[in-house]
Length: 455
Image (tube, rainbow, N blue to C red; front, side):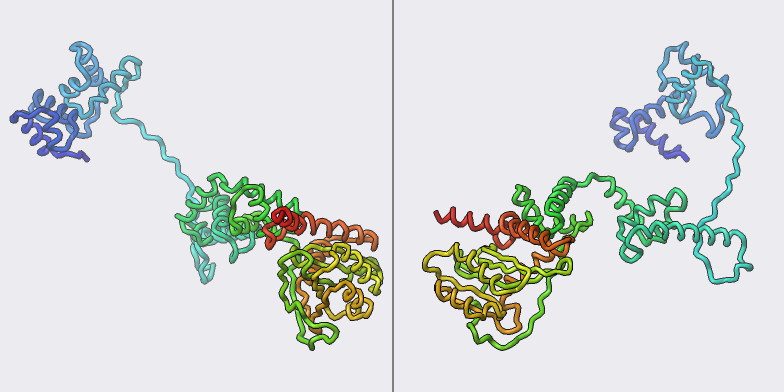
């Protein structure tokens, strides 16, 4: 269908011929191209009408030849030749001219139509209906069969992920992209419950480069370096110490994407409110903050079982920086276990220590020899209430960390191997393992920094 009517063309032509304005001004007035108006005017001057040819009339090979030869004889432009012969487009003359000189100018009267190939139409999937299959037409049965094939293929791909309820839009997009060459896209999206806009958004998002690729590599490296003992908070602290500013929530999300999770078992506390001990008062009263080194110590005894044997560990911790000041190991929970531990710890004290040492109500700490040694050095004794481990939570927390990060993750063939491992872990805990409460420093590093700052 022609864009402009004959009456419109004549109005524009007469406005130019009868007026004093130029072609460009008239073309702007009627909002048409100036070359188009020029062709109308040329055709009108030659023939007295817009186009002498009838629409849809085919051009014979002889007519095309006459047009090309007329152009060459009179040395006319394409636009002038088109106006002379009443052609709609001047570019058509150029095409005929190329065909004329290449010898491909043929009569395009009625081209032979290609024989249409009958394509077997693939049945569109249709949701099965609750009707007797014997009463359904063959087309409906084939459509239902195609739907079941599509549903089966989708569910097989879905098994590789978490399941239909937990599958994300990204995972559904991957499945649909894989199956869209076999089944119609619209039916797959309907089956997966994904909007078309969401599907194309996810496809584009998956093609973008991962902006967190370098950070993921760093998270993976820190996780492997710490043997899976660090969670997202400590990994964030390590990354920040390396000079990269990152939010802990981003690190947590990236760890979920990478499938990284701290292998440390969560610690749980259960307590019983018993009577207050009579041997020594509870001077600490759960105030586990110390202002200086050797101000508050906590101690306790824990048990390990390896190869049908038991090993007991008696450490003492400084609450200033959570450093293990001294420790002793023995295969029997005798008094010498605690006594030797005290001898090692007291070597760090000065002549007149203002120290409080806290423990539970174990028999070691109620023994007269233990209490006499503390009184001799002027150390105040503090005890938890009966059956209340929360009063000594700092020491209990260390035992939980020690067993979760070390004992439960390894297999020991003998007590000697366990002793060697405990020596290595306590050295790692004091010198290398960072704590968020210590400005992401190790206990020894925190104490060293405090001493340097004071000096």
